[in-house]
Image 1 (cartoon, rainbow, N blue to C red):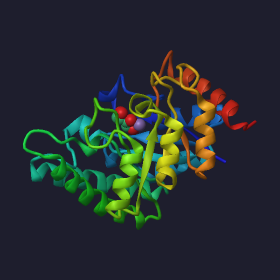
Image 2 (cartoon, protein in one colour):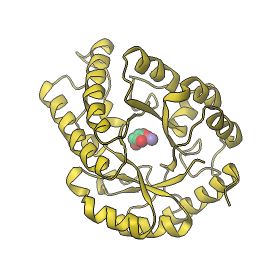
Image 3 (cartoon, rainbow, N blue to C red):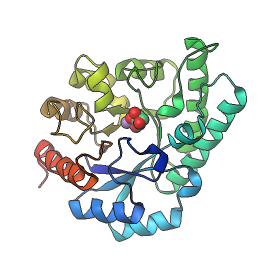
Image 4 (spheres, rainbow, N blue to C red):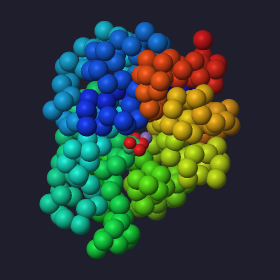
Amino acid sequence: MMPAAVTVSLVPEARGGPFVFWDGLADACQRAASLGFDAIEIFPPDAAAIDVATVRELITRHRLKVAAVGTGGGWVRHKLTLTHADAAIRRDARSFIAALIERAGALAAPAIIGSMQGRSEGSVSRDQALAWLAEGLDELSALAAGHGVPLLYEPLNRYETNLFNRIGDAARWLEARKLTRVQILADLFHMNIEEADSAAALREAGRFVGHVHFADSNRRAIGFGHTSVPPVIAALHDIGYQGYLSAEILPLPDGQAAAAQTMAAFRAATGRP
Ligand code: LER
Ligand code: MN
């Protein structure tokens, strides 16, 4: 059974971004639990913002889990990426992510490499960017493995990266590079832009899929756009996916309504009461 998760941003500078709750962890946990979610996904500004004892107390009280922890705060706040031309910036990006992997790992949650992957541009060729990305993913996924969790790599749409836009391409690359501790985050919003057929793409990426961002075509809650959900759910079943469907979506018309719509769509799609 695929569990349901909902996002909370702790980064005021990310306003306008695809996160459901914005008023702190206590508020998010209370709202998530009362709507029937199994977990929260946290977008923190940095590792220091995740006090493990406090988060543990909150999720235990609300019978939730932490589905994943985003690392994009390092991009939003400091413009760090794993593929920057400047070695010092690449090193700072790795340390920033490593610190988050430690906190997330203590909560049994994987960290996500999304916007921290950067892009190939200027003096950085595609081959060079991919070599640095592979190095970063290898080193960071070893750290995650120490906590018994994978590292999640997320292909993004063409307006956010030019490294990998399609999940099948990313899966083949991870396999060729033997990055066995890395799994793919399949974000249905990015896939709506880049894949010819999202269900077919999920089958192509198969066992590499480790997390799903459950978003409609317009990045609103599932059901508020034009994505056909049954083929996506059927593909996830067929590949044996048992991870989260996590609502990384715009808080429209507001966070509470977006979360409630997600839960209704989740129940309709998975048959969960
Ligand atoms: C992060 O999960 C993502 O999907 C990117 O578009 C950054 O917002
Ligand atoms: Mn995403």
